[in-house]
Length: 83
Image (cartoon, rainbow, N blue to C red; front, side, top):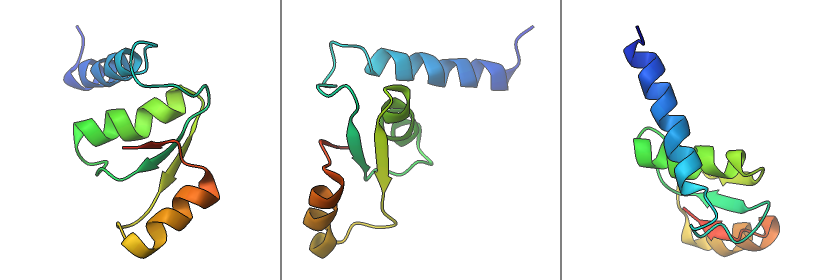
């Protein structure tokens, strides 16, 4: 019998595979994503954390959003997607 944890893990993997499908907005083969959503929520965990890594991309994390450094981070890391 499958445990709740195994079911949850398989669900996260399935969700990540679904949203990294070609029909979604993954235009770049190796995306650089600026993660702005919280990872403690399922949406942030799947769309921000798992998807770029599953696609072989880079995830840029910042401790908090600061408008002054936002554009510099975008330029320095050549961010192609905000999540």
